[in-house]
Image 1 (cartoon, rainbow, N blue to C red):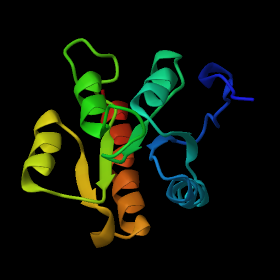
Image 2: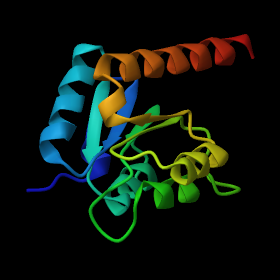
Image 3: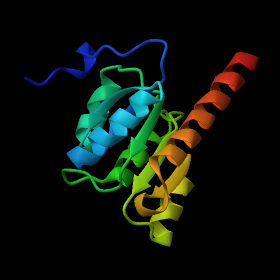
Image 4: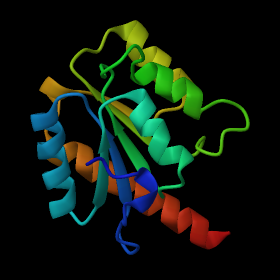
Length: 146
C-alpha cells in the first residue's frame, strides 16, 4: 500500500533530502549512504511523485536529482517548475547527479540555479554528500545571522 507523502514522518533534527532517481537499486544505495550520514530521506522516481511530496508539505531541505526519470518529464522539467517566479520551492538546493553531462544540459541546469551538477561516473557518493552537507551548513549559518 502506497503511503501518502503527508503521512511520512521525517526526523525533525535531521536535514530531509528528497532523492529523485528512477533506478531503484541506485536510489536505495543513495538513501542508505545519506542516512548513514545523518540525513532523513524520501524517494521519488518521477517528476509527479516528487511534486506530490512538495505540494503535500513534506519538509525538504535539499534535492538529489537524476536527469532521467520515469514518465514523460525529466529532471530539467522539475527544476523549471521549482524555480518559477513565485514558487515556494525556489530556494531548495538541488544537486543534479546524472549519467550524462553534455555541455548544453549542464549549462541549462546551472542557468536555472541548481547548486551543482555531477556526472555519476566522475564522482563518488561521499564527495556529493560532503558538498550537500557544506551547502546546508552554510545556509543554516546564513539564516542564523538574519
